[in-house]
Image (cartoon, rainbow, N blue to C red; front, side):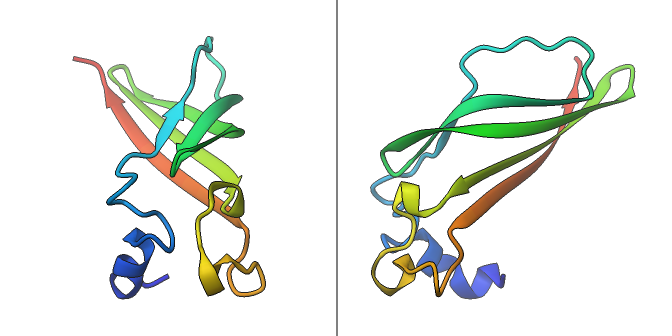
Length: 109
């Protein structure tokens, strides 16, 4: 997707409505981790005032003694969060499945 071309549309009330809802939140609540390289946890995802429990896949790699990489993938239904209104609400025009992928690097100080 050409983000520059669609940036204003994505940030408008048609999709994410960042003026009214400037923050989306992923709440992990509580989980434990013991040397697993891949794990799935249930998180609460809040977008536009709607909260749903969705699975979050994580891949953890120790790259060095002081460096860890965490790749995450979160998939959800955009219509469940009212992302896309009017002609953009149709799943014939825009798929319902949405995903967010992250690549975090954590350094120990």
